View 1: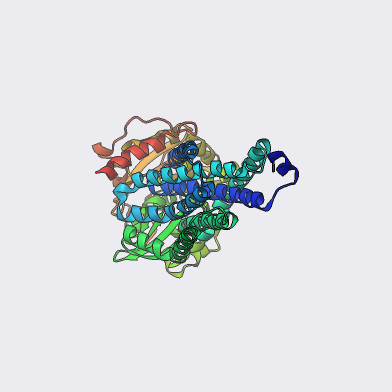
View 2: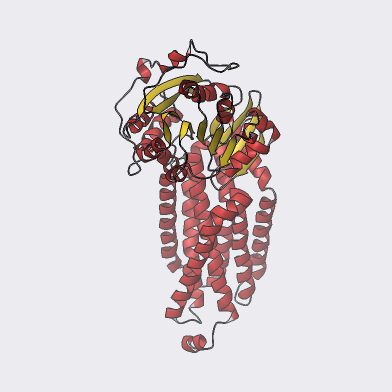
Length: 513
């Protein structure tokens, strides 16, 4: 039967099955690309760089696979089946392999990451050309290309929406990869059935399909154990809570030194000395303001800063703006963790707003006597925007005339230029920048900057019951030795985000040594 007559009689079951396979293949291919990019940004930082290089490498590998497809001339269904099984196993296991590699052989992580991306990308690049050549038997070329590309793009669209909203929050990275590996293997089983009369050694193909499916199902069932194996090695201490949200990986551990919170593998606080960090963050501005009534906390979803703010009787309301609802829910409802912040998030004075702080500041709203800015360090451009002159300009508009804002600002000893970049950026919007620092054993020498319209006035008194700060020693925090003294720095703008690059360079030297 000619291709024209085949087209006239309408799509046949084999054609429909293969076009459906194109949809699944495209969805799976994009999932492997997204998991590799997301994991690299989680574990290596700088999300823009990681996504860009991973996607570029993946697309290059797909081009290599498409070019190699010309060398597959006979037994196309058999080749397609084998490639599907290889994609299923390598792509499906990719997140699990990378998690384990990061824990056990961190030095080889980057090499393994790009190696796996090249392999999976090449295999995915082989799939569509082979499907098109199989379909070419019965569909005219103009319809073939349009139909294949339509299903290819539809599969990519479905996954691009589902990946951040459903798959990662509900299944996690490892199970998401394994689920789509299973789907690739299911396509191989489908091909086995559709082309059973063309395949040689069908028994061997059937056995390969069975073993691949069994391996993927087994790994899916044991995904929690795989994650625990990797994270127990990476974090050393016993993990008491872990979750993957659309924004980050949240892990809480407990060891001899108490609880520790990690976001995307980066330490946020340690129970043994978090009081030093949070007392230094909150009290120099709260006590200096006099009698603050309305306070905002940007970031700080663990509630520790709120705990310190509630020590001031004058406070009438605290607005906590935290992007990730999983954080505020965890530190409100988990009994042990809520105890660490003194159940501060359950206070009737506290209003929790789960949204992006940048967007929140852009909206009309209240003025605040004190604003505490407690974001993670600027490890990527998504966080770096919260350290730009655009952000501080918005912050200035929500600060009362006599108010103070305080910004946690990385280490002035380890990341000296990064620290003074933030000071320069604050000053660029017309605010005064008053820098100070404190020693927090879990982090080392740590820096903060007060932003205000009026000159900063050292407080004469502090709340009772503090464990770290005292009025006589408070002035010492504002003295900078030579190795932390101010250095020239650029303004961090949305258009350049120079701070992220500087931060990566300075902290990268520490990690390298």
